[in-house]
Length: 525
Image (cartoon, rainbow, N blue to C red; front, side, top):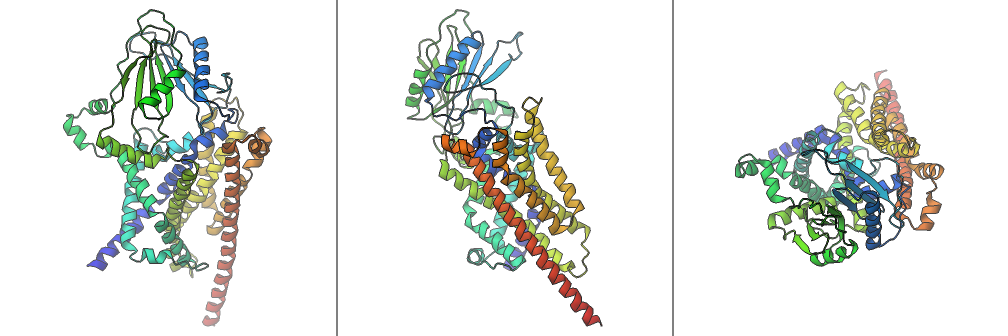
């Protein structure tokens, strides 16, 4: 019975891993890249300088700018710069022309040191990887549903894998290089065990984040089908007084930062929203940053009177269920992580991606051995081979192409950010066509070599198209810009090594197959 149960788990592990493997590979790779989404966005908008400035001085500059450019707006929104996001972002919304309409929203980026406008290139930056990770570039809510189903499958695959490999921890210390399928399986087991806690945490937390979407029964029962009422109770809207129509100067905003920190025992402000600026009923809402602690506090904010500075309201302490959900959310997103811990997140994410990729290679390799002599591969195995190549090496090529598009597309191109995304998908589709037209290892070697070239040449591309090359970024201490270039260079070297290993393996396989053919011919004679 036990053996039968393990065999059933092995079957489940194998097939759910295959059917969702390519989707999971894309989700995990883009999710891993999203841990450095702010740094990626900074590299893709090099016009925004990275400077060490105080939050108070940046806020004062933003207030001065908005008082000059949008004195009659109904709302100001100020996103403060941080160590990871150098831009000072300001938005303002005009009063709607008719009741029930939304006023026009205008957005600008400012230099946090001078307060002058910065004309940065249009790009989605690292936000693209973050959004693709859970929305898959699909309309709401279908992408979220598909990614959540994939997370459920991943969780099932992890549990079934633990049950199937009863000697998995023993096998972790076993690695046999140059042993073909055995080496792939050893590597699969090693990365699976080494970061198993991360696999389980990141997968389960993703299910918790979308719990209200995938398990709404209790909400529907308690609120009689009115889901909006549930969210209104969980995230109550602030009661904003209407404009009094009495012009009154807005108080300086910078001193409110210290008052907000006092309410949060040292927590940092991420965003300020000023309602009815320049009016007697002005209010200032300061939202807390999610990067100062593990537990994410949904909607944590304090509200002050915009004229007197009096504290009007503060978000109450989180209830225990919300704190638990906030903990899972914080662990999954990793906003609290410093540079070293963020790199650990990144490495663990790559290990998860590698575990999925090696599983797909193992599935195909086992079944290809049965058809080695005939050299005729069934359609279903050829289909898996093509999807493996395009789904893994092709995706890596598309990621590199996304960065190249950022530097090569004209700055003034209409919908430029969307064309960067289009370039990503065009390259990915071309990699699929290439995998169809080329056979096996040849396609692997060619696509890995192309990915190595594209990634390895990113620092050179950056130096040729912008003045923010490694020589400048290292001297100025812009570690995000320099780190991105260096990370791409290291990635290119690793991919070049992988292509070389794949090419050597292809030659070895060719020699072995010719030797086997000669032996069979001699036996026949």
